[in-house]
Amino acid sequence: MLDKSKKLDVGKLETIAKEIRRDILLMLEQAGSGHTGGSLSIVEILIVLYYCKMKHNPKNPKWQKRDKFILSKGHGCPALYAVLANLGYFPQEDLLTLRKLGSGLQGHPRYGLPGIETSSGSLGQGLSIACGMALAARMDNMKNKIYCLMGDGELDEGQIWEAAMTAAHYNLSNLCGIIDYNKYQIDGKVCDVMNIKSIPDVWRSFGWNVEEVDGHNIKALFEVFNKVDNEKKKPSLIIAHTIKGKGVSFIEKDNRWHGVAPRKNELERALKELDLE
Amino acid sequence: MAMEPTRDGFGEGIIEVGKLYKNVVVLSADLSSSTRANWFKEKYPERFFCFGVAEQDMICAAAGFALSGKIPFACTFGVFASGRAWDQVRISVSSMDLNINVIGTHGGVSVGEDGLTHQALEEISLMRCLPNIAVIVPVDVIEAKKATIAAVKYPHPTYIRLGRNPVPIITKEKDKFKIGKANLLKKGKDVTIIACGSMVCESLRACEFLKSKGIYAEVINLHTIEPIDKKTILNSVKKTNAVVTVEEHTIKGGMGGAVAELLGENYPILMKRIGMKNFGESGSPVELLKKYGLTYANIADAALDLVKRK
Ligand SMILES: Cc1ncc(C[n+]2csc(CCOP(=O)(O)OP(=O)(O)O)c2C)c(N)n1
Image (cartoon, each protein chain N blue to C red):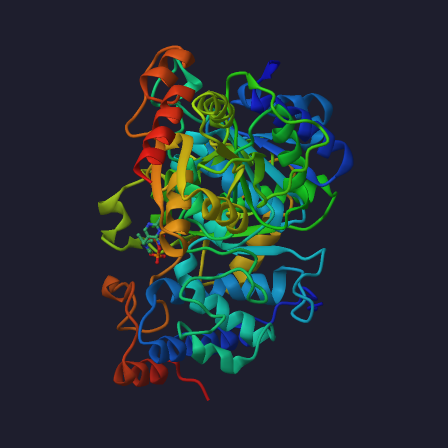
């Protein structure tokens, strides 16, 4: 099991974040297609969960008592694959098979790859699956937590709100939703495409405990994940303010990068910016 | 002949599996009494979960339960289980190939007065085109109970189509039921009648009528449409060289469609599909079955016609 000995080494995690961003860009360039913007925006969220917060075991992915993570916005999977490989769920070399015939690293997460808790990619389904897992965990008196990461555009799906009701109705305090609030979806800015007037208010009115956080600040993320553990009655939602394409200047907030992979020259420019080595 | 609705067989079966398997859970989308899910609720309230009128959420939550080692039965009307939540079934049930059982009641035009919104006529097509899911249409209350129990042990998803109204009980407790194994009910030589659900009994009546005309029909209860029992069907049609399929469901892609696919590639013969060709409407079940040509007389006519053309 991972030692999440609570002592947060922010500097080290920031370096890992850079490595993960590098891997995302490398694998997307190799694949020649995929979702760059929405993968880069979730890196710190994944790192804090997988390196400091969740109880899980890369050597035993099916370990009964593990916390579970569901990537409901399945198109962000390059980030999740990079983290899982970095932790040893599967070999690092596999990353370069992304989207290739026969690879376990499908274009959207597919159940069966070690570390992947459920298939996803058809937006709107993850939170319902998380509710089922949280209810099952409660039946079994498990102490684990179920995390579910959604996109802000994904909130347009009606099923999200069905699940929001379910989680609140059943007081699923063992469930924590996270919104990658990067303010963009495919057709443009979320506020222009389908504006939810106040995301926190809506979730609060559904009966959720709501927190907001800078989704790229590792320390703040760690604190907020710990804070919501104190909520024992309601499901919690963390609205993570993020930047789509975070980490690469010419990708940040340029929504043309939603579903486009970097070409070789763009990859080189991006890697220089990440300034690793 | 004693009559009971097949949904009652599910109710009886689910109580039994609740007793036998502690990891069975039942999920319901606000139709607990209509689907008989509430029979389970009364016995095992701690393993019963309401989702309100939210079929998509319920189907995916069922996947969450299955991914956590439970064996869920998700219950609603067939129209909503298949149509409203089809993408959820496709991704979270079919593609992950989990032991999830989707119970769709109110199959067929014989739902009656509620009319077309509530009469499931396309679920067999919608479910059988998805990989991994067994599509089962029990013939009577006894078989519905057996199907429910069998679904627990079946290591893949199932869709069980049930009816609202009482239908004749034509099987016995001791009769064999195996998912994927059709039951030959009457032996004959002139024509094969393949039916499922409520249409099996009509087919048996047609068989009796045909006998009076000197025609011997073989009758098969094709309770499992997917995986289809190729052997039983081919053995029969190789003898008879003519086949009528009968279902309370659209003829496009349903049970008749499945048989047509099988025979088209393996043993093309004279064939007639009997079933729905359009939406239903309000009316009494008997009136509707008559209006839409789903009676023993229609089946017998089709069989006679085929035999004549042979
Ligand atoms: C049900 C469904 N409809 C449409 C799509 C296509 N699609 C992929 S990503 C996306 C936009 C999602 O926006 P958001 O959740 O904000 O993701 P992000 O901007 O973080 O990438 C859409 C519409 C899909 N995957 N699933």
